[in-house]
Image 1 (cartoon, helix red, strand yellow):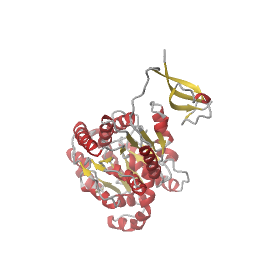
Image 2 (cartoon, rainbow, N blue to C red):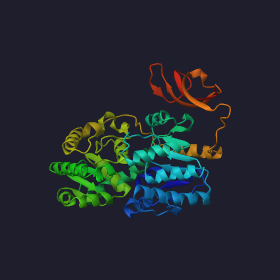
Image 3 (tube, rainbow, N blue to C red):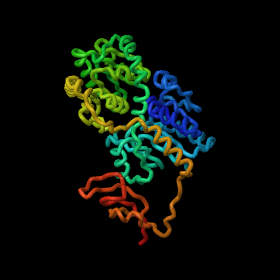
Image 4 (cartoon, rainbow, N blue to C red):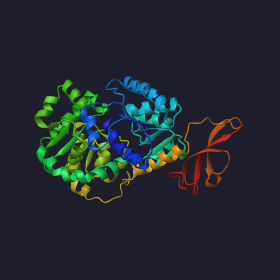
Length: 425
């Protein structure tokens, strides 16, 4: 059972769904309806050539508790009806939280795509969701080794962690040829020139629900609009919050506001902008993959890899800092576009890797099982030499350490291993 409910989840799960189809894996696709506007959901099914969901729970908007509760209630019934051998979800939304809890409560293994991302900001609802999902998952598909190490140091067994790359790289690589063909028409449609505008996205609660931060972003955009053309596709909730604070009219006079865009049209604008300003995790990844200078309107990011080479910088929500970072990124735009490096987010094969691991797990009978600790009831943590991994006391392998203390994924051949042991008194 594959569960999704928002635009970013659909974009990132598309390579996995395609891989499952190609591998002949039988699955049911459940749409929670967390995103229900046509421009935030259905248009993406159409663009990606997907048939649509087998089941739509249609939960719509609501508080975190209302959304998660309704999705859990719906999934509990569906899991009982379909009896899946595995439940898969991607990301950090309320849909993911509900899918993870519903699966394990029904004793079905849960697989988390994009596991291990950490912003370290527990005021962020997405951080809470992703941590809970990772805590109960049986399979963790970490996009990078950085993310994998986060999991290991939280006590996740290395046996369940797989570094796969990020499926956003798959999506960008697959669709960019089509986007490039349409780019000229898209730019002409909006009266834009390549490299002649800033592209803005803003939707996270930490910005939209905080009047002080929202005003700071608007003040920055108003100032930047004096120097650059500013293009701003508005998320429905962002539009509502701006209107409620009396800021929408100010922006309309200075900034080019748009309705939410389809994926191909948005990628065309992103690929050809001078600088992207965003609080979106997915846009940070897409921009980094395309080497688009980026200013993130946040104080932290769960995608630290995107800050490599200065492609992405964190500006926060103070107007002067946003303007300062944007001007500097604009000045470096040519340099950033010419950078040559191996993408740490992946090589475009993440969907295939995830599909293969899912298929093997299902065929091998992956299950949530009760451990038998009657003879060894104490579980402790110790550093072991690498040659001790075959000890019968070893319950789980966690991180490994080089002789200089640097952590890495367990290899069993060097340094010391952090292990979870089962022992008796």
